[in-house]
Amino acid sequence: MKATKVTHFGIARKIVANITSESWETIPHISYIYEPEVTKFLDVVKELNASGKFPVKITVNTIVLKALAEGFKAAPQLNAHIKFNRKLVRGEITEWDEIHAGMTWILPNGEMMTINLHDIGNKSLVELTEYIADVQRKINNTELTEVMFSVSFNDTIEKLKRGHILQAILRLFGAKTGKHKIKTLSGQAKKDYYAIPETDRLTAADIKQGTVTVSNIGSVTRGIPGRVALLSIIPPQIFVACIGSITKKPVVKQDENGNDIIAIGNEMPIDLVFDHRAVDFGDIVPFIQRLEDIFKNPEQMYNW
Image (tube, rainbow, N blue to C red; front, side):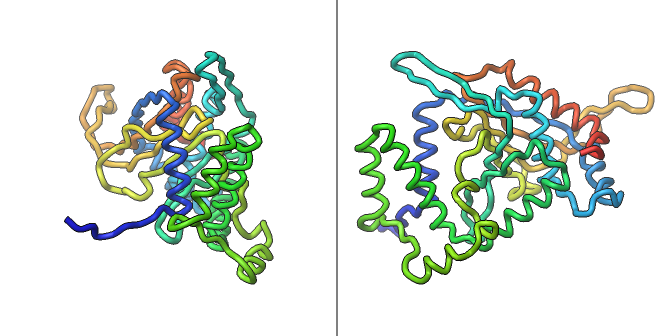
């Protein structure tokens, strides 16, 4: 048997591999798949764009992100970080007043990375749409290896400060030596890149960890049946949501006489995963209830 290809980890793969390994080694994951029927919701999205009320087109992806932000407002215990010392059985949970959502993003080279979308809870629907468009503009001007390495390097320095000396040294050695060396900019190319204003490119603040994570696998699997059953929580976060592809399903509805009938509907599975050290099933109920209210009464989105 012959190997057909050997690919050494680049910086993006290194970061993902390191974070997910830590996640599964330390976090007791619990998953719940929420399956809302969203036909009426989708109809109102079309109405919003046809109404002329909004100066920009509102995409389904953006409005679902806004809906999730409303869910986090109803369940602030999910917008939190955890510290836990298993040896001493001591822990603490810190809730945050702003929602910074780490959103998975398809990059120009086809790879995926997480972008930190800042303060999505306090942005209107138009502001959120314009903000996401601006993030895409910055991505197009960004040397991604450079910014990802800066985040990884800063994280290594923080580990060094906390006394994880051997771990920090090994990480630096692995990143800068041999076949696994990460090649960053140098010379004139580096000067030219850093001459680009930070307002026109991503910085470490744009890709460092947020307070929660949202994955939108449905945006790249449109029309394909399926759902995510489990995904990694990014420590020290305690919650991650994954939006699945909207697919047509037989659903039970009521006719004009109040009788149950079978009809064709649209289902959007959303996988909700939480850290059982920090929260229980009851803690995600307000989140789900708020989303149910939005999907069943989507006219409220006119006020977003």
